Image (tube, rainbow, N blue to C red; front, top):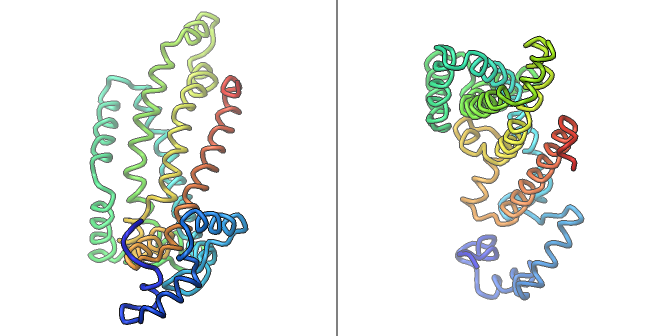
Length: 282
């Protein structure tokens, strides 16, 4: 239903019609669409995503080879963004209406308006090409090598991710600060620190945790541009090359992988929300 014939792509534009027909028969492309779908899904259940047209190896093997790069980058971004976002969000809410709040909110708006690809290119030019502090491309060797090579890509994504979390956390804390249970706690003589850490922050973290789950799911499948800029051999670069080469098995396999990762992340987020607030389980 989309342009392009996998059999023609495999054999090349000069292949004879007989050779193309034989290849379509070997791939099962001459069968009805429903039969093709059922055959493909039965293989997927067994972990078989087919064979790549370009690389001539199983798609599952390619995913396993490239997933660690994207996974390491996602964890790196989380490790950078979450602590900073928590601190800035709490400061903005604590000093609401002051110059601290205005400054953090202004920086948040600025960070959200900067395109990630433009920021990645800018940082690559400044810190890698001009100053030579970081590598231009690659994944590096060993844990420290990965940290060094992926620092600029992680910072590029974090600068976009931090403002989103800050704005959400600030709004949640401000909303919870005027709730009835806060007034009741003050009437009982509880300290402001106890009220904030044991009640306000706990309830305010639920919306931010749900948003965080969405952002993590985006990190798994939305790092294509950053991986292209820094030439990182991750899933994003694999997907990009597959789209250019019309490597349909890779595209289908990665799409299912992204969907499965999103489901797992959403499930983990829901479980954590239930642990923080038992009322969510109901």
